[in-house]
Length: 244
Image (cartoon, rainbow, N blue to C red; front, side):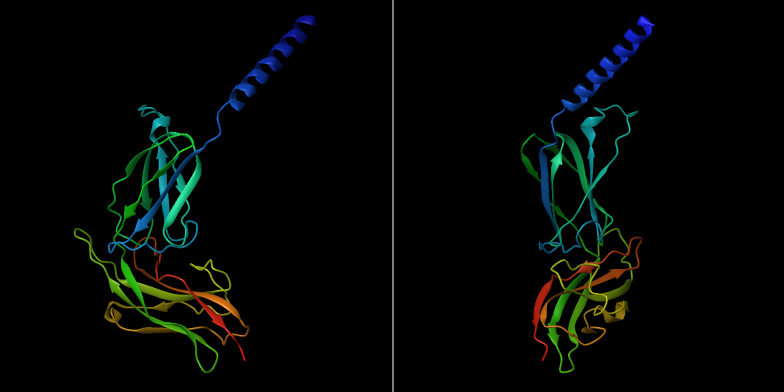
């Protein structure tokens, strides 16, 4: 009985020592941040999170060159202005690349070295499928509908076929977070677009007249018939509405 007790005590001590060893790892404190630009050098407009694209990041130094070791990628969220940041990564060598967005995916992954308690900046330039421009910025018409208009331009990329334009939408939000989501009471349904409409003014309108006096945030997006059907966006415009 004494031998059994001593054996159990040894196991508990071993587990305790193992637990303490794991707890001794330093917390991840390396930072990576950057900006996605379009082919004109402007900030590439995206939706919050991973709704319109994401950043794939793989810690190559984890496997230390051993191809038998599987490394699970991480995916970083986007901000609406096309920037990204993560402050809780372990130091090491990483490959980083934007993916699954409304752009031609011919980018090579960037190799970056993240150091403890330091910030590393890595930027990317992409060629979007569509470039959107405001024609009439958001306004309230005489019947209380919120309206705006835009035009789009298709962008070509050598070695790729241009996908056909697919749909557009105007999102109307009661907060500054305006991407592929909005106030369902006001945001209209999707509208089909065609290549023949390239360069033409396209007007969009809220579903119903605006009921409440407040600030609304408005954004237009359009996508193409590719695998992901993610949206290219205008920037976000705030409009102060005074309902009489």
